[in-house]
Image (cartoon, rainbow, N blue to C red):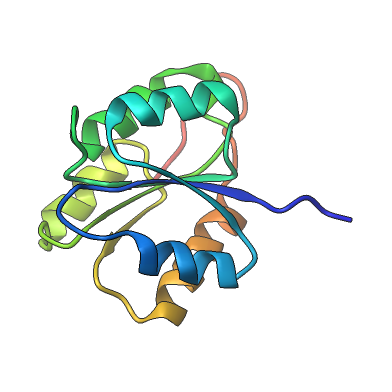
Length: 137
């Protein structure tokens, strides 16, 4: 039996993450909620997730900063990062997310089916770059 993939959901304090958590759980994921950058780092030290879903308005650091930091660490390059926001809706923010090493940028809210589909796509298409190779986003 295949283990249940874990999604680490780092959410901002301005919205309730329960709906996103619920949709991901219905799709077969285990979801670990964290509410700031310090909790994100602590959770990653305990157990690497299948995917990190990080809000841009993360307390402590922005989601962009968190993604950059994660991509610089060898042990956190083995899973995809998806950044998201209810507030930052312009294409320039999506472009910045991709430059930071994220596989996708979600402008919320999304229909539940689309939200889950985008998470599944990030998991399916994530490929760890070979040693010494640069990845193209």
